[in-house]
Amino acid sequence: MLSRHPGTALRARDVARALGRDDSAGNINTVRSTLDRLVATSRAHRAGRGLYQTPTG
Image (cartoon, rainbow, N blue to C red; front, side, top):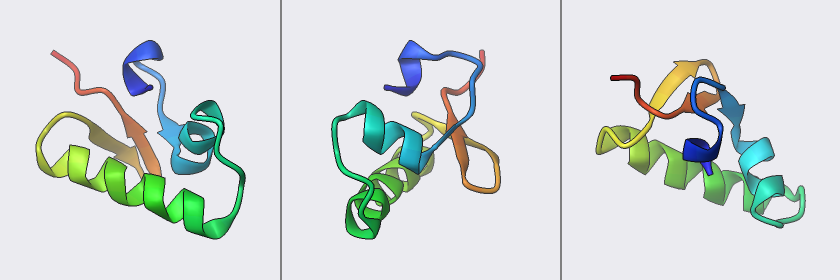
């Protein structure tokens, strides 16, 4: 999902919606946890508080 929007920082809520999940807190937290794991493995990075995007370079 992040790779479809290079250079754009997205919130976990935006990613959840794009994946077709509802806006419940549980679904958003699940997506946020997945995004945090992607950050830990350098497959994504934090662009700010609560924002994620693809790594540059």
